[in-house]
Structure formats: C-alpha cells, structure tokens
Length: 284
Image (cartoon, rainbow, N blue to C red; front, side, top):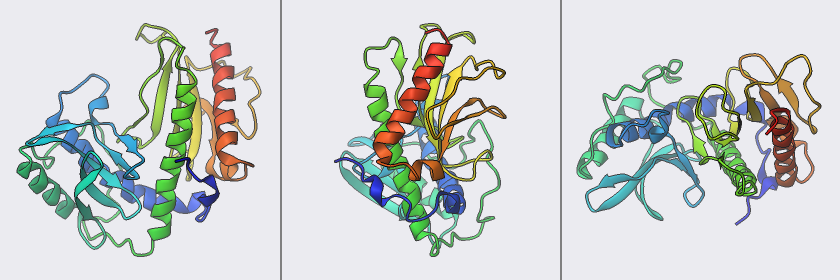
C-alpha cells in the first residue's frame, strides 16, 4: 500500500517537539532490550530499529526467544511499547498515565517470560537530555494528534527512502539497510561509494530526522562524505539548502516538504537530485 501523503500536515511540523521527545525516550527501551540480547557490532547497529509498516512501528532486530523470534518496538500513534512476532503483537504497554520506570519493569517481565535478558540496568553508550517527565507519569492526553503526525513522518519517509535505495541496487558497495538510530532518532541509509571503511572512504548519508537541536521540526538530509568545500557549493534542487554548522548536508525541512506539490514524488526527486549532486562532486 502506498503511503498517503495527503494526510500529512494535520499538525504543523514545528508542533511535534514534545511528541518527538517523548517518543525518543520511549525508544530507548527497545534499544536496551536489543543491547542486552544481541551480539555487539562496532557501529552499534545491533541496537538500531527498522520501520515495520504493518505495525506502524519502529522495531528491534529479531531476538531469539523461547518459542521463536520476537521484536521489541515502539508504536508512536499511542506511544506504546510492543512485543511482536511476525504479524502479531504479542503484548503492548501504553505510556500514558505511567512512569518510564513502569515501562521498564513491564518490558523486563515480558523479556523474562520469553527467556531473554532484561533491558533494565543496561547503559547505552550515549546520553540523552533529561527525560521530559522528570520521573513523573506520562501525560499524553493532549498529544494524540502530534504523536499520530510523528508516526506518519516516519512512515512516509521510510517508503520514500526505501524507493530511493531500491533505485541504487546496481551501485557497489551501494546503500546499506534503512535504520533508525536510537541515539539521534533519525531514519537513514548510508550509501557507500568506496569499498573501504576508512576516514577517506566516500559515502552519502540519506535520511530523515524527526527534529533535533538544529531544526525544531522533521527534515530530510543528504550528507556527502568527505564534506564538500564550503566555499563553492553547488546549487540544490528546490526546496533544499546546504546546512554547514554542526553537520554538513543538503536539507529540506518538514514545512518545505509539506508545501511541495505531489509530496512523495517531489521528496524522492529532491533526495535523488541532491544525492547525484553530492556523488558527482565527490567524483564517484
């Protein structure tokens, strides 16, 4: 089923900051479950999520539980932890009216029943800002529309990014998996242009952020590496601009994306155009 971009914009992109903060912190529990139960890899991708369109959720890699594989994830529409097996949701925990500690205790009880290691007590290799509840209960009653819109941003972006990566199937080494990283909460693929993994290996990161310290709204980015010479940057397809402070990349903000005609196709065209500009400038 194609994502319906006409449903986007029910809440303005800049109104999603609180919903994003709650969801970002909630996502740390599935990341901790993965950290506890999967073998570590150098880039920490064992704790990253994929977008599961059937559940409209970010889910972990498969955890080998008693009776078969399960995934732990977050479904943003109602802000809940879920444990899934294939197409089925085995159990769910809604954060509204409950503390973050209660969420962790619930998840640990489910993991224990499945013969898995607990998420509680896991220390992830990064820090987030203070939890928005301050240790109190989640009060989400006024954020229902914002959480739904945030979920749609992930769903729409995932479909566009998967289509973009699919068009590069003949490129080697080419695009990696589309992953959501629990540290920055961005959903991205790294398109490798060189086989090596050193600092000089050329690549282009392409993804969507739900918002961060740089933009208080969702945005799409296309980031060539090594970064391009800031004194002579090529023109970008509209509505993009070059972001050069804190990170480097071509950016289109959520507000700009919603102003596009035929949003899904236009966003794919922007991403593809910015990628080809970066790729050409890198000489790949």
